[in-house]
Amino acid sequence: MEENDKKTGGDNGGRQEIYSETVRAGKRTYFFDVKATRNNDYYLTITESKKRFNKEGKQYFEKHKVFLYKEDFEKFNEGLTSVISYINNAQPPQEDMDKAEPEAEAGKELSESFTDVSFDDLEK
Image 1 (tube, helix red, strand yellow):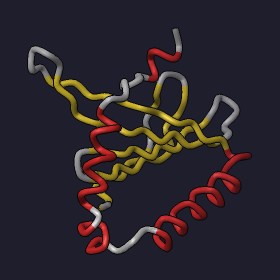
Image 2 (cartoon, helix red, strand yellow):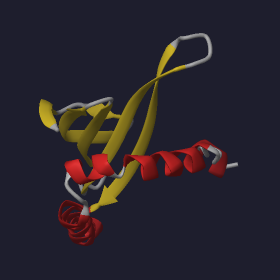
Image 3 (tube, rainbow, N blue to C red):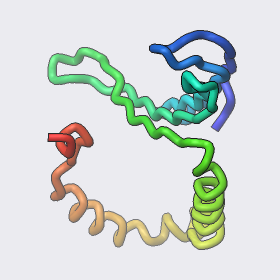
């Protein structure tokens, strides 16, 4: 991931935007935005944005947002650090993954039979 954009200031729907950082990572863009409540208490929003195309070929952006409040920063950071460490230490090196390709193809066929659920569907 590489850092591409930083900005400060602005106002967003009654919530002041304090600091923002944009990270472009392959087909996704992540936005890390520090905002302030009306009581000037800071919180973080993390937004994942992916470019998609509808049936007519028109481009749109699919976005998923997480709100992270100050009282949860430490536990969130501990959990994130833990799973990243696990992945970095437990995942076989890429060359071992290439050898396991036939097994991966079998799993791919299975996963393609599952229905994709949208977060919007869960709110109904």
